[in-house]
Amino acid sequence: MSRETQVKDRAEQGPRNPGWAGETGDFPHLTESDVRGLEYVGLRPLDGGHPGASSSHPFHRAEKNPDAPLFEGPYKERLEKILSRYPEKRAALLPTLAMAQEIRGYLSAETMDEVAQALGLAPAYVRGVATFYTMYNKAPVGTYLIQVCTNVCCNLCGGDEVLEAFLDHVDAEPGEISEDGRFTVTAAECLGACGFPTVVQINERYFENVTPESVPEILASLRAQGTASVGQGSGVAQPATAPSDDAGED
Picture 1 (spheres, rainbow, N blue to C red):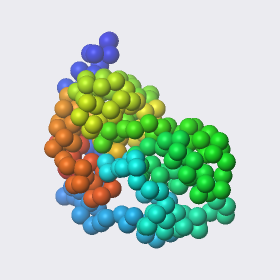
Picture 2: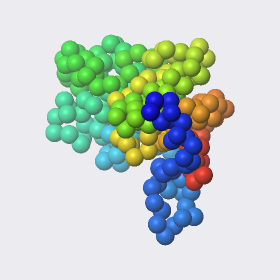
Picture 3: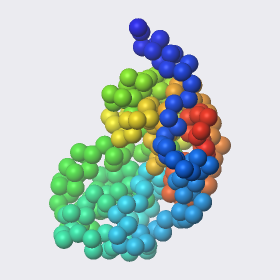
């Protein structure tokens, strides 16, 4: 049986596990928004809030400014909170890089040098760590960074076709910024949600059970949003998931 036939057969089977919540047990009335807590999660404070949460803020944001200063104002306060959670400054490198990317959108050589200076580390050491991890962008990206899982589970369920659909609809090559500046599409090795293939991460938001047919709807809902209204200030996209009888809006 060809891959095309397998993908078609899966599409004809109808909605699968809606993802995001799994079984709601005795609470079938809950929507995806209810489960995610979107109505009460509130805004994430730029200063990091409680020190225990200061290292866990999203760092793929729609709002970014490559020329913005680092470690000033509330971000300076957040850096101090991050440093308070580790026995030595070197151990705080990953969340500090994440904060720098949250602010500027990617990690340029100059940004890595500023992080190195702030933590008292060698610039070469910081660049070695930053270039090891694919979660750090080493070049500018669009407003929405679209990462399509193409690892085993998603690959078997049409991940390559979903990736091609995104690239075709935004009219860009992998890693490039679309002409309108909104989208960058890349392949991801694994997004850790293997029960809901194909999985796509857009900024900090997961979309489960994505098919090539659902790509235009996802992109249309992203295009309909202004940057200022995205994700309660977190850079998280808020459209519906891939079509499903059970999936609500996030």
